[in-house]
Image (cartoon, rainbow, N blue to C red; front, side):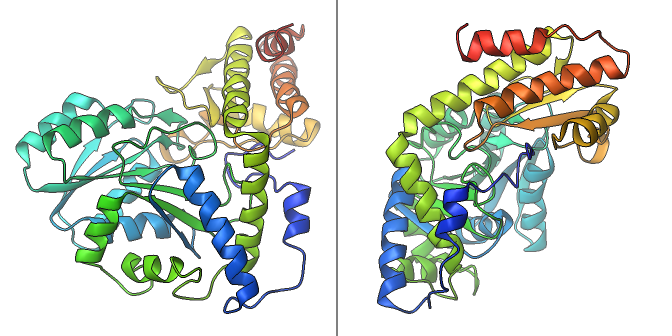
Length: 367
């Protein structure tokens, strides 16, 4: 049972959709598929424009940094992926101001306010909606609103790689939102997507940057239902299938189920004595901090067929993360918390009495 926060399991109907004959990307047949996929993607983002890139999410992050920063960037670092925005700036010698926090701590809006007041040349802000290194949810919408009140022309770029398809994002003040195929969209890795505002498109067209990751070139071609370079044809077909499924099921239902599953999991694990790591948890995953993390993960994988993620860098061996993104079945989520409780019994921390399942069922199913 794969319950890591990416890659996530690929549903059978998506695998079937991607199993047909390979289609050439410069044909009317693929252009029709691309057009429908693009339409659904724009609807999912709730934004004015969208582009697909044959890359990991990092490619989309780099494209946004280089195409949307003309003067100075403000980056928020509360984990590996916020840190990555800063490293991309450094790689291109783009001036930056970095706000750095512990991985369990959300960005303070007052720090953003001060940074903008002290640096009038900041023209782009880069932040995660969910920083998946610790399962943290940043107050992105509030930060974006503040920044736009200070400077309406500032670009707000949000990494939504573990947020799109998880919750409804208020994109009112966002200019670019990034996501990747292997998270809530439940595809294999290799496709990155960016939702864009009209203001972002205008800025990109005024001063494009780069070659492969030149967003002006890509926007122009994708509006013609093709791509500037070789398209990830199979992944695009899979994306069309999952987006059609999500739309048919209902976006609100997906978001509500994910939120309920996340809450039920958090409360179930708290009830058996475990501590939630982030101060403001995201619904994409439940992150637990425990001295027994390594033993728990080992038992879950070897004895209960549950594969969950650990931590990185200074959190290695200290946290574990259980995924809620995508079409996680009710029984899978219930089994995961049950398995954690069984693991605690096996290592002598707490005697198993079924509390985790009881709390999960009470919250998720209302019984």
